[in-house]
Amino acid sequence: MAKTGLLSKIFGIRKKSVKIDVKGLLNRVEKNPKDIKAILKLGDYFSSKRKKKEAIKYYTQAADLCIEDGFINKGIAIVKKISTLDAQDPQFLIKLADLYMRQNLFGEAIIQIQKALELDPKNENARETLEKLTGTANNQKNFIEALKADKEVQITSRTTTPDEIIREAKEQIRKQITEEDVTEHYDLGVAYMEMELYESAIEEFSIVLNSPDYFEDSTRLIYECFFAMDRMRDAIAFFENLLEQANLSPFRKELIRFYIGMAYEDSLDMEKALEIFEDLLNRGYPKQDILIQKIEKLKTAGKVEHIS
Image (tube, rainbow, N blue to C red; front, side):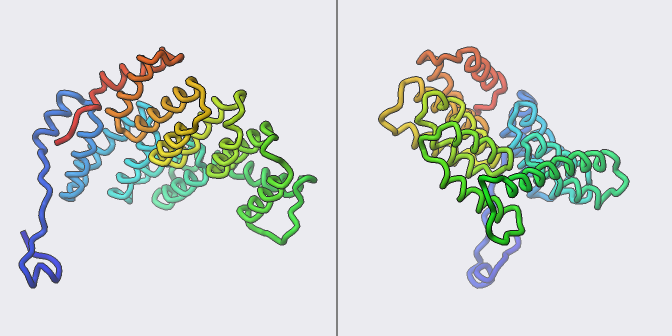
């Protein structure tokens, strides 16, 4: 192995290479074609060896499995790797745009479609998708204009950008409603979600968590916000912190544990997710059918094996 860097030249230090048991990984995939972790590791291996064709093959396989099982954010991350490896193929950019659309991330989708059209200006699929996306973007602009004209939210400064308008509007709305105005905070959280202002949405939903009527829906929407931002570890931390509150009923605690399990599942930590779902099943969590489906999927997919 060639020596690299100043320290290597002076001291003869050699870079250590990580050994990958490729044969073992291939055997695992042969036995279980849905072993996402093993397939991803093969993609990483061939990518490190600059074997683009083989890397794309395994990355595509892993992405398709993630998407099939509903792990859209993980699928997006993998397709991003593929589009980086093959920057001249518009099909991966179109696929990435489609995944962003599923998550209502229309701004990101537009960027990918525009990149695809730069590579292939005659691509009809990309052009049709861009027209749909542009319509959605215009609807968002109309929402901002309506917000700007709202009698109760007067934008007084000479702001020009949507971010500045929304920031000032948020400040004025906050002055008009108190923490007791549960419905207003909930509706505002939903509005922020629609505008892809996920952190602001989480703030509003967190305010209404103490309301029994809104707890379940707000917990679900908080999770969806973290999911949309692809921040599963932050979701786990948020819900684990929420569990420490002393005034939670047994049902609320179980619901929070369910979404912690969801976050582990969506971050592909299948063993931890399985452990949580099985524990909830044994505790008598009300949504037994959902738990059973998830547990069976995790077990039959064979995703809980360790990679040595």
